[in-house]
Amino acid sequence: MRSMVQERARAIALRKQGYSYSDILKEVPVSKSSISIWLQDLKLTDQEKKSLKNRRESNISLGRIRAGAVLRQNRLERERLLFLTAKEEFKTWADDPFFHVGIALYWAEGAKRNSAFMFVNSDSEMMALMFYG
Image (cartoon, rainbow, N blue to C red):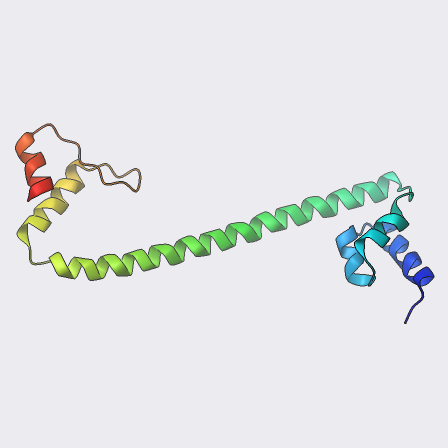
């Protein structure tokens, strides 16, 4: 086991290489508060500051990319489940002629820009057919 003096020297060396506190904690098994105390008076050169900034920006970009990929995968899974549910529900109504008329009317006159069902038409008979069958 290394002494605390050795751990502190290692933490300072890593910080000067552009490592973040989190990265240092992966290499030096001490508490974050110890790292913070050891490094609080450490003066960094402009190059070291630039290196830290670049690593932080790179990590932020990588995090955004990963989060975007996870969100996309979640959306695709939701859409897959909705499609399977709709496919089963369609079988229930497939033989009803009013169902086909309703689909055609929605296709022609329905609002498709959000997830709410909307049917826009001023013909009262068409509205009645759409909503009451």
